[in-house]
Image (cartoon, rainbow over all chains, first blue to last red; front, side, top):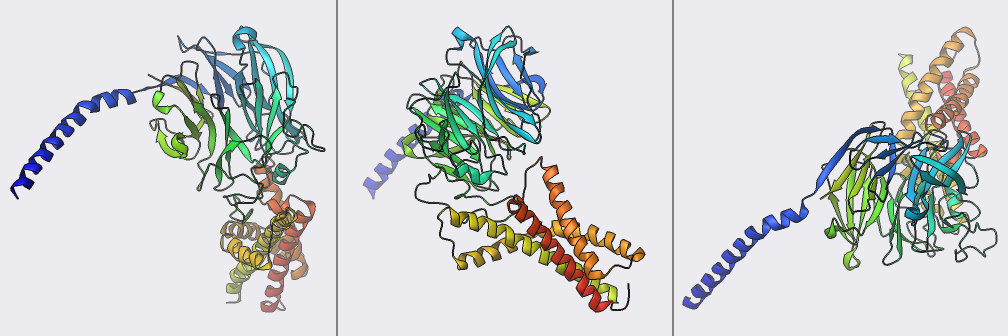
Length: 373
Length: 149
């Protein structure tokens, strides 16, 4: 009994020291997690995406067909001129914008948008030179085929790979979901082209008869998030499912991601789209969400400002409106809601040049938020 | 007292049309899946049909609203023009389902929310479901109101 008593005291002292250490360490941990969320005082009309210029200024696309520039020093918002005519209808409009990997030398940006009229339209991607707030020398580098009668599910996200080839997400057009399983069209595909619109020689279906050579992967629904881990050359995509069944996928060249043959969701009207969730030859998602979170955009975080988020995917979602971090460490996915002070439907999240995050909320009076330290 | 039958007939005919639409919708999905190499059994078909009908509340509500307006208009028309009940309610069911389906497509900027109606045949069969619902409504009314307009 006596010995036990002595041991108990030892443990008590150890416990006390641990508690003191924890209390002392807490402010340090808290400092690490501190960040600022700054709201830019401007109403953006259906903001959809953003891109940060090398000087820190931020370009914001508005679905209605405009591009605005936020001056990072003064927070003044100005219009960019020479914007292509976009069809603003349903889910369509002026969509994504990204800079050429060598933007500092060539001033080239890439813009995706829906083009045409309500009875015949498509997803289009152009390149253009951004010179003094004006888009010049516009050139169409991709046009999804065939045209559609709907104004939904365009995909329309863009990202560059290490080899400077451009990845474009092309949605299933809502009414054309079965075409996502065919290789003769661009519905429900991930497209890979070079920056000048030519087709890379190592695309998976370049030599396949009756397959469009731009196709990189197929069997997608409405992929509104595409993110690239450039260090490990891994491409991720998220897509809206129907009612439930939103997916996060690891994208590999030539693979079939199953929509609409396999899905974890059901139709909006409550009926079954497919009772199957797996099939040989069709890829499984890394994770999926039932009920839906409506994933709207995604980045792979490799910036310096938030080192604790390195090797994570950060996903914005429209329902209920959150930013989620998915940690990819140790081959397990750990999901967490972050920056929960930003309320409402979140349309986009992008990484700026200094590692800060640019977040856009959805709607006719959408806001831009800059999250930094 | 006979008029108490009206809402019962109206619900029965709406339920018939909603169930037929669900059946056609499910069939088009499963036919396509079978064409893609999936093993779709008869047992699976009936299990899914029951599931879809039990989840088909939204369909039923939409058809109830559609038929309410359609049958009301038909009753007014029949007050002035003594057209046969089965014929008038059949036409009313067919046309109202067609109008409802087209309106939902317009509202959702071209997106067809009931996948089964994307083809002409699917759309036609949906309208025929409306026709059968209307016909049943007319037929049941005939049983109760034999010699009345």
